[in-house]
Length: 147
Image 1: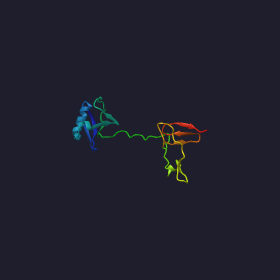
Image 2: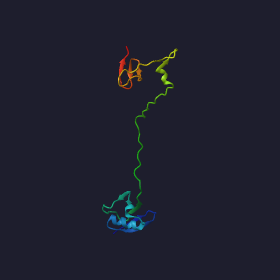
Image 3: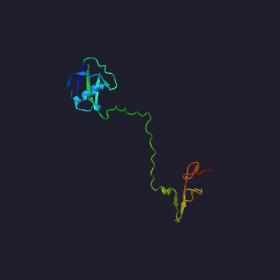
Image 4: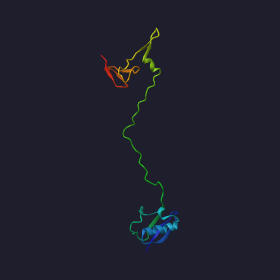
């Protein structure tokens, strides 16, 4: 039997004769602490002892008893981004934007300023967008080049 020192969870140090296997040692320490053996963690020299390892502790070594903690994983490293965030396009809100599609004449008639899309899928009322070199329908994609 090997004589070892056991530092318990409350900080008290005891001198015990070590049993033959680590699983027997874990169950013995669990009885001393009053907890289940699966909740107990044994370590020596910053090395955790598992039940399936061989028992080769030197004489008069110190064994530490800890309780297992839930969520005691590694702290995640903060992510560093190489490129800045893409700025999303914000739609400009134009007050009274309808006025650029129609014109009211002096005699009270209304004239359409934009050309309607001649496609059968769009029909009357779908205006074509005016670019500097073309006119395009936003609904069907029909495009006419300006002369």
